[in-house]
Image (cartoon, rainbow, N blue to C red; front, top):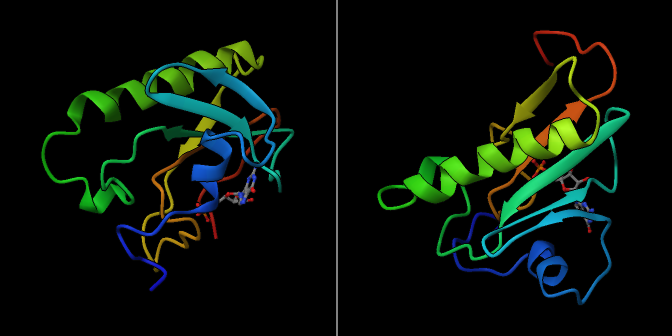
Length: 120
Ligand code: 5GP
């Protein structure tokens, strides 16, 4: 099933460098790379490198507090590195109703233009 908690995704191949991605930040636990289908002048994703069952925020349960916090810190650091000092948006599409397509938790960071609210 699409939401199979254990199924590998394309992001595992990006982490292992089996398929190329435009990586803009990497440390021991997090990776940031440009979205292949950008929805803003700057659009990158921040993902945990070791998923440990963390495919959806709504299924994060216990024990992931440090990693979840780190992903937000990485998102804001890389956003500034990308020139988004006038602001940006962080989005997590979670589950079917949230339009999640890749079941490996990821933060979208969007910026570089005036964004509108609410989204569709
Ligand atoms: P979701 O809808 O799951 O929140 O978003 C998944 C995002 O991953 C989409 O914005 C899509 O463009 C991006 N994406 C899917 N496959 C790849 C890929 O192979 N490389 C990169 N860089 N981005 C991808």
